[in-house]
Image 1 (cartoon, rainbow, N blue to C red):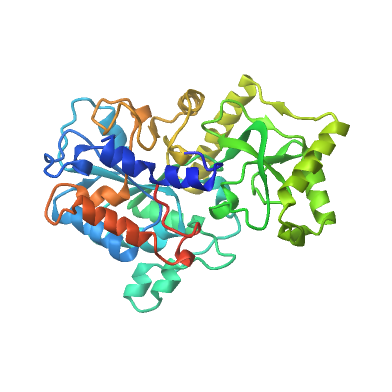
Image 2: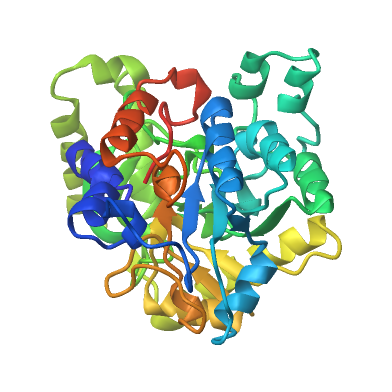
Length: 415
């Protein structure tokens, strides 16, 4: 997945898993077969982002009523590295990013059903100062909070679970925490400018994680605050980029300053604002030698290793006694350099989305190539009250019509 793309391409990427799973059959058999065999000798891994109270309860009930066991990340690691392991009706539930809903919704329901999950954290995006414990479903059940308290994400409130909430879940043993990299970073990998930050520029997600990292005096600005007029270059997720492009900071700030002179937000009311900014760029280039460059292979490898080690070390520091040895790649993919860096950083398991040539996870399979299937397919697991494909697609359609305030990107993060 590449978040720096056109709206059409982004929409395609968000729905690609449906085509891959149902048409190309790059998924476990239970996803697309009407009468699949029982789950045996494999471990389907499900990927969640948010959790909705009624639906997640229904999904967990489906697992329990049909005799499925949910593994901890440690158990999953054991089975993946033990080729003679015997498995029946065994799955792994994973949550990416560590949204507030892992605490407010998923944790109470997992406890209710005696199930387990693994959550991949972005420690560099969790506010250090926000140490608090917010109401969750247990408070709703006791009458001391409302569903809107649990589901809504208010202005200035972190969309991610806080360290205090994470610590409670960690100590309970219900939810295990592993790494989703340090910053969920996107980096420019080309000198091609595809757009400029404007009032309608949509960073899509909490923490501005869809805005490529940029530097100030050579140091990364990991908050990724969008500055009006700032050029947006072709970019890729850090774990997928072959070589990062470092733009000329002077050109970037020149565009920002010119935007201020032209009226800031009012400037973007003009129909031709993009050609005007492109002309600003061209004039600058004609009068100045650009101070831009691409990183060297040595710099890339060092940056990848540093990103992964820091994510690992911070989680272990915040959660005493925790051993972080599993990594989930943002946007479901990574190149060989990132995989090698993960080995050097001490990770034993790497999680992706769907990958060609591998549809499920069997004991003895390469633990650095773990594939996952979307949560929408969980109730396609064989058993009583199994959902049909049509019921599954109908539910997906209904989910995408939910109120925007319930989700930091305006809709359930599926894909």
